Image 1: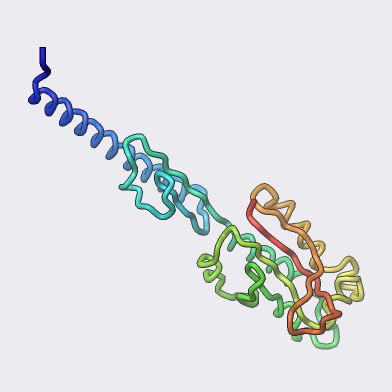
Image 2: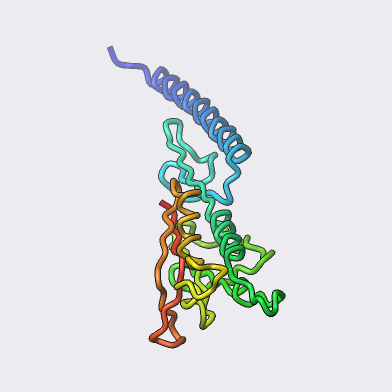
Length: 201
């Protein structure tokens, strides 16, 4: 017996109606859970993939779709590293108001200089950078290398190496933090400057 076209249409309508209900319920669940995480975990930024599409709206998720979110704390971590560097930076004993070294920590993102991590600086610009990039903090003062090698009694074990370890201990589960010597283009080629490289895992 031939199947009725009317029944076929009814079945399709019912199936589509059920899928629409499931899709709306799934989208609402995703929005609710995302809101909960944002309140509890308070990430600096996040990226979302809806059914594999970066930046797609949650409302576009399919009834059997997948929502994936990647949360970033890179601004918080870089701010922590900058504060640790400032606290560890030697101060001129003859002129304690001379804060040149501690206010000269430069930030690079994938090899490009993007700012100076001065005390009280607005770091929200970091949220506009790729959170998966490699961030490097260094100091191009001519005596930075000598300080790192223990020249100052205030920092006999250096500055950058110790801070790199501090960042690793605190945030090692979400970023890698390593000490390195960095050569900067345009400066004295033979000179290498102490630096910390930080990158999301």
